[in-house]
Image (cartoon, rainbow, N blue to C red; front, side, top):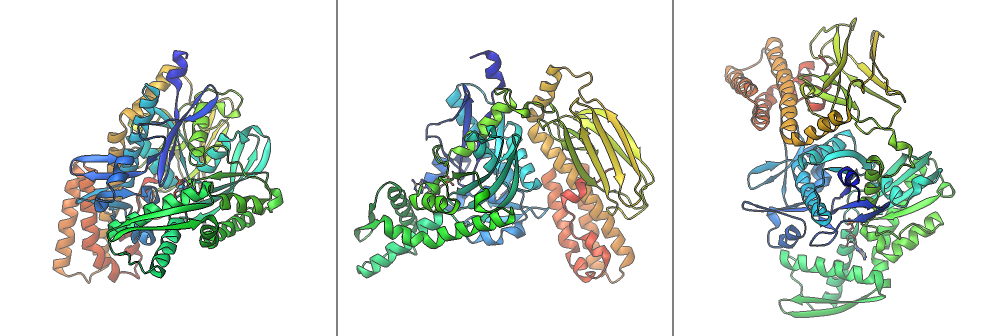
Length: 614
Ligand code: AMP
């Protein structure tokens, strides 16, 4: 293989709720990469004193070490802790809010973010890929569900960076599945991707036009999948045991784990055979039984019907009927069940694509996309991409990318920002190019001031910034104050004076410095939030007089501590002190509930703070 091709290579990664894996394209064909435990890396992390176990070893240790094992991390990515209530009962580890209210995991008194945990899994995936390939891997395309929002995508991107990967692109899982089957080569059509995994069910309907996939609708249930099929078998077995006069102690976690393991084995056997024997090594002796495929299909029929109802809903949302669907793709381990295949085929009236392994197809598609982005394929429009991200500076010197690196050209992207100071009548729009989190480390392209903004309370104005990059690489940036209608723009050529090597260096430095960059960005974002909260607290003191001396002193102490933390550079400490101030002002905020200031006192989200221009 040419040295150049080697250097350019990038892998595709399916970062799944239950399992993760990597693939690479060789000679135009995507292939999964196997490690010493096979292709699949369970998305499980075990904490064992000072040792971190990831994948199969963590999964094996789970039965003996349930409180120290974390899984289903993807369910938490970019989510508020308050939104995790439904999951809490299902997950054996503690889910706690961080200072921004985002869901984090508490293990052995350490609070760890889902981004850090996902980074640990990605690091393992990277390691496995490097072992399989015998060379280092630095670049990847990572997949996410089609319904992931910006925060969840950004969290995934951050995880990749922390794992030492340059994330070429985040792509939707159904799009990846379509690429794996080469559907992008067809001109147009509507594609259904039916994804039934271990714990989740997703149906996505995509529209393909001229090589571009658009998500028309998604539906599904984040708590419906193979685990429910296993539970149905366990319930069936328990009933049979009772009628056979056998007592099974379901209060024992070990017995429950054993039942689940046997049930899953039985389920898998029934995908290939009409009958499966079950053997439970119980303390009182072995209990043997048999389950037929028909019995299994009867048990899971209501669950299957639910997935089909979601399909119908997604069709309705996309304003399509079954006849409008050209292709159906099966994804996820549970689509190996013959009844699932049959029902999907019946509903859409066509045989679904299932030749590629349903648990590998997403990673394979990510590898196809990685190949396209690194120039391995030249039959696609996607080759015309911007080599570096383009964005503007937001409060505290943070880079806010508006057109991302590797984004298709021509491109138009729009984002809304607001002001930081009350009565602010102008904002400085500074354009930067590069992959680092702070603009100081990126390349300044130009700047202009938008003046004549209506003087309103900080956070009220809406300033829309539009980036238009044309096919010749000319970038026009405009900023418009929605209230006053005032507008200003600038035109620059981002590629001017940049060599290929400089571009590579800029990209490389972003993942070499990933951890410190993300910490610095976090510190700045938290500082913005801290300043806003401190200002609002002082304003509350002025406007609201019913504050006891003790309470006021506590609040002032908390402000002092927060100000001290602001002088340092530790985001963890700043987060803690912000929480303390939040606790100290909680009562006051509640009492002032009818007062507009209460809103300002309540913690602002980082996103609010981040989206402020100077
Ligand atoms: P995934 O989340 O896509 O990795 O899928 C994992 C789920 O697929 C688990 O619930 C597995 O039990 C299930 N699964 C894997 N292989 C089979 C099979 N041959 N038959 C039925 N279910 C399977």
